[in-house]
Amino acid sequence: DGGITQSPKYLFRKEGQNVTLSCEQNLNHDAMYWYRQDPGQGLRLIYYSQIVNDFQKGDIAEGYSVSREKKESFPLTVTSAQKNPTAFYLCASRPLAGEQETQYFGPGTRLLVL
Amino acid sequence: AQSVTQPDIHITVSEGASLELRCNYSYGATPYLFWYVQSPGQGLQLLLKYFSGDTLVQGIKGFEAEFKRSQSSFNLRKPSVHWSDAAEYFCAVDLDYNTDKLIFGTGTRLQVFP
Image (cartoon, rainbow over all chains, first blue to last red; front, side):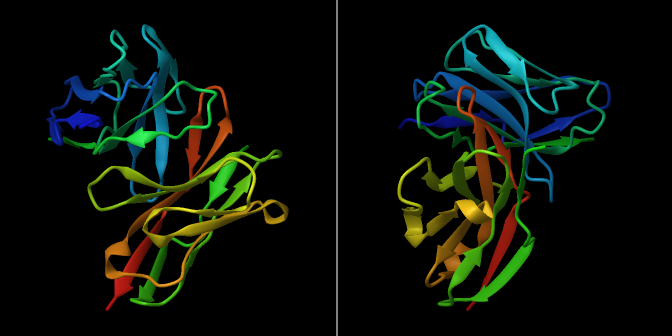
């Protein structure tokens, strides 16, 4: 089945620790996105990438980092600089930007701080 | 600044009743418009989308939405709600056709009583 997978479903972070959230898609989509969701705030864009080896900051990139070494994969690292990381993280992908297409979302990863 | 407003945080309806969820956007031109639905702890599923043309668009699960340029609105409707429609609904706009960066509203939580 084609789709977007995110792992793990739940992730726990200790103080001062970096953690990495996985996002993989087998839809052959060019663009990939990371969003953060907090209660009552909707979704906010962290980073996005339109092609391999290139990515841009979104609205709330501070404390996060990404890489795009493969078309299928767009991992997000939550660094120790992110002081309030507890949230639901959603990954999305879509075909080449500029066409009348939509973003497709993965099932999400919930990050909790110990 | 561009924004998306969903004025109703929480709506409760009886099963079988009609439903209208409101969405207004602030932007000079006509953006691409979307409605997504999210069940608890899950990712987002696309209900419907508007790019151009007919201002009344049909989506999945019996939902429809009407784009009204004069009111900068894109309200979601369903004639008869089912208990399985209980979820959170997000309106989103795409202001940048090259990068497809979505701006989301804060969501409306729908509760359905039998």
